[in-house]
Length: 152
Image (tube, rainbow, N blue to C red; front, top):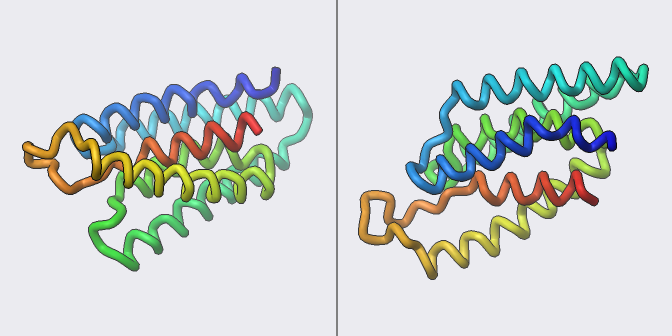
């Protein structure tokens, strides 16, 4: 059951998704705590399996994914927020342990889930009469893609 080491990221993506949907914010403190928890879980798994290279691989993929997400956020300001960028770190540490194929699967699944989520949210936005009108939370799509990539 090596997938159990992804539990900190699963809890993280659930908590961050709920907070993003409710208040359109991603608390940096939560991201930092869950990133540290996922890194510790990665190190424990690597110590048990004696494969410490995968921790470096996961770190590099997490940073690369966050950087690409940052470039996408800067390319079209307002489309993605800094919270979406930081949410990539703990999830990238979990998905990155499985290698490049899983990271590519994550990005494809995140893109498809994001398109479906945006269409669903703009149609059935329960907060369309509040100050959050017109702002689609994207962390649930990031989380759904990560869960799909880890399960696949």
